[in-house]
Length: 441
Image 1 (spheres, rainbow, N blue to C red):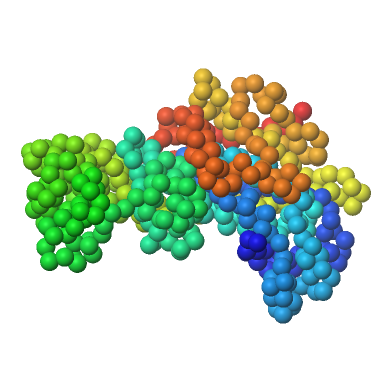
Image 2: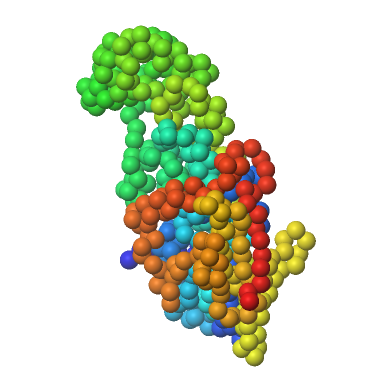
């Protein structure tokens, strides 16, 4: 049995359930929405990531003996609420943007429908997953745009928490990275893994040449040798002398990378190793990668920047109640009106309007009540953005596991082609397309 995820939540979720069970509102049908008010870092688009992980975590959101014992010992809720939680299972529905989809301010990324008691407790879990993974995915997408056709490898596990590192590798792969150094990410999500040796390997041996010979004996001449432990020029000479001109690659992890890469390429070519590839690492981000566009670099390894969202470690999404049943059973839209934190009530259908395949706006059609939402047929020049993710409490397995990751990666590759040219720029600016609201007819 999978470990319970039920305590991956905030205490006030359960105290609200406790109070709602007392006053009779716990079983009111509600609609919650997960969205972002703005794009952090003044970026031009965001990328939805973490959806497949979240669906599996919702499936395991059950209160077992250990969870109930903790809540009882800590006096978080009363005995009747403990009885309710013992039988808890989410039975509602979730619709939302596909993983890998682009999003913009106000996009209804997830819509969760169910009773108040069963839907409100998912807030913290949903936000912790999507805020983290979407921030990583957005940064990784920008790096992928900057890299163009050159491969990117994620190698930032040592700069993140152990579980966050696995999630980060997954998010980066969805948005354009081709491999990860993290073996658990490879096992769990089917992501290709890579890696050869660190500076410690060279320092272990009496000479750099001894280290290179041992690595080639173990991994073959197609390996990549790290040539900057001591002197880069000498390291390249030694690498080719030991491996021959068929050496797979060299890695550079320090120095003025554009200058060093040009010098190494010239040296490799002079030695006859014209097919030996150059990989650069060393604290790269999207701006450093863009600055290397004209350099003779074949691939990039990115660590700290990608697993921390390149300066934007959270997507800033929120989870708000937008519609509920009233005491008479009728549906009403509700919204928060706080300054700078207002939300927009009502259920929503979302569409990406297109002109000759290029996105022109994020169209969000709002329904005050619970009548049928607009469908794609009502907006022929648009692409519908929402899909059914959970039906009657059962997640769609097509979005989970390694197959879900591959589907998200393919979807992201397709939809990124819809961005207008201005959306590909790395500079701070307004969103690439505007968000437009319309009332349902």
